[in-house]
Amino acid sequence: SAVISQKPSRDICQRGTSLTIQCQVDSQVTMMFWYRQQPGQSLTLIATANQGSEATYESGFVIDKFPISRPNLTFSTLTVSNMSPEDSSIYLCSVGWGETQYFGPGTRLLVL
Amino acid sequence: KNEVEQSPQNLTAQEGEFITINCSYSVGISALHWLQQHPGGGIVSLFMLSSGKKKHGRLIATINIQEKHSSLHITASHPRDSAVYICAVSSSGTYKYIFGTGTRLKVLA
Image 1 (tube, chains in turn green, purple):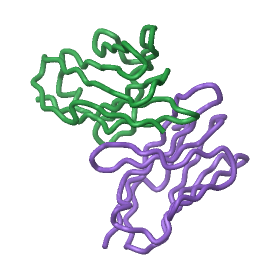
Image 2: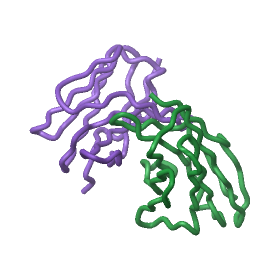
Image 3: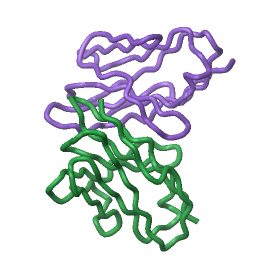
Image 4: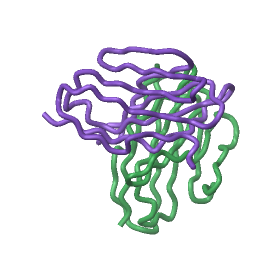
């Protein structure tokens, strides 16, 4: 299995600012995913990030709001831009490994 | 109607009870996954099933492909089992999951 870490684990931010979340994997992986989990809801896929190509965004998510970088096979960042209180969520990264996904511990974001 | 449905949504049990969480799906799948999410937010992958039954410690997962149904059982439940249990399905050739809405389990001492 893959071991995944995320930074920060939690943050409180002011509206209008941006936050970059880092995801580090202990092995080289091709596919990484970014999810949002709003309070009381299940996970929603934001985008798929493959190394060497542009991220593929799901319906309802745009690059200007959630820019993603994938500079190598062990690291990715998600930026939440121009934040509003509606962006308060848990953000999780995951990786495809074998036939399953392994998830990071999540970043708990509160926007005031 | 969601493509992956879980029941119950919430479940409270006494320590030691046998617990069953159900998952039904309406799409073609290559695998079904059971995930556990603790209050801190992190998600652990418990099982991946494509047929039959798997067991790990006190956890048992079964799947009936013909009926498009899976169950997660917890034997001798313990307060540390308190978490949200999420069913997800995936199709051949993709890592993408379709998630159920989750079952929030609370086990009382």
